[in-house]
Image (tube, rainbow, N blue to C red):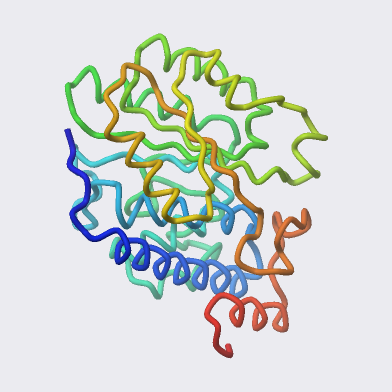
Length: 284
C-alpha cells in the first residue's frame, strides 16, 4: 500500500495552490496565443489535475512509458491545455512548446494524441470513451498484479453518453479497486446547463447503483481535494471509486466563470490581460 505524504499539510497545500496558479496562467496564455481552445473546462479541472500530477500520481517524465506508472485519461479531451501545462511543468517537454498549441505539426493538438505528446496515456476527444479506456487499463493492471492506479477525469456533460454506464457496470463486475473516476461537475456543457440539456438526477446515486464507492469534494478547495484523493487511494476496498467534484466552469477568471460561451472561446488582448491580472495578481 502506498504511504501518505510526509510533507506538512500546510506547505503541501500552499505548494499545490501555487502550482495551480501557474497552470492557469499557462492555460490562458497558450489559448490566447493560439486564438483557439477551451478555457472553461480546462479551468474547472485545474485544481484537480494539478493535485494529481504534482502530488498523487507516480510518474516519471524521463520515462513516460514506465510500466509501473499511474495512468491518467482526460476523457474530456477538449480541456487538454490543463494537461499540457502540467506535463510541461513536470518536465515531459520544454515549456516553450506550449506556444505551439493547435499549430500544424505541433506535439500539442486540440485534443490529446498519445502518438504525439510525451506523457499522454491515451488519445481522447470523442466524448464518452474515456471511462471505457480506463476500465481496460485498470483491468490490465489488476490481472498483471501491478499496483498502479488509473485516474479518469470525466466532464459531467459527457455523462450523456451511454458508453459511460456500460463502462461503469464493467468496472464493478471486475472489482476494479485501482480505478478512480473523477467527475468534473461544473454543470455547464457546450449547449447550456447540463441539468437542462439532459437531466441526470443524482450522479452520486447513479454510480452507487452501479456498484461503485462514491466520494464528493469541492474541486477548488485544495485541502479537500488532497484529503479526498488520499481517502480514495488508501482505503482498502474491492470496488471502483467515483469522486464527484463540485466545480465552476472558468474558475479563476471572473468574467469566464459559469458563462457557457467560454466553453470554447479564446480571449482577445484586453480579456487576456485581465485574465492574467486575476490569475497572477500582477499586471500582464
